[in-house]
Length: 247
Image (cartoon, rainbow, N blue to C red; front, top):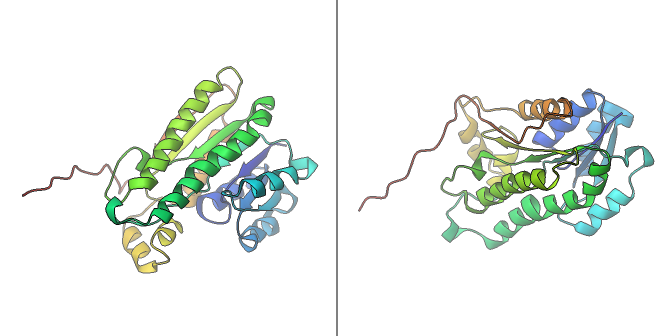
């Protein structure tokens, strides 16, 4: 039986990914800050789920949780770096520096910290890494500033990991989703449900399950195949146009 660790499994893509993997017979270490959000996974999949409650930004807590893993969950075959967030929609010159730091700490620092910790075991087991990036890492848009930059980092880090891990058998993939209806926009707008509804209304966005199915597909491919980078958008979304300021 294979084991996956999924960060940010308390909601959205992370929760859907934990469900997809467990439903396919994987053991899943589901991580997140909110124990009550992880409990339904245990109720649904029983012994296939190990809930690990910690904040990925806290290196000591991350290491403590990994050190405390039950023996059956210690051999990790797949790391899904899903935990991440966007905060604020304003231009850089009016942004909150604390929000920038939180995005960097979560989307970049925490991701590389847990990856670095698990690399020896992933190499030993010839496992895989799936990093959740975003189309925001490829296409700039007003208000994207630091969020887009963190996702560009995830894309490039994934490619460089793939290069460094050449010959080890470890697979590395970056998934770049476009519009997915989850709590993402609610968090970004400080809990403003109307803003979230306005963004997704009538757009037929992708779902968390769409992306989770993609993660499972990547994880289930033959060992000699690697998906380097995969970009997904709903049909209703396409590339942004150029901006022109006129005097």
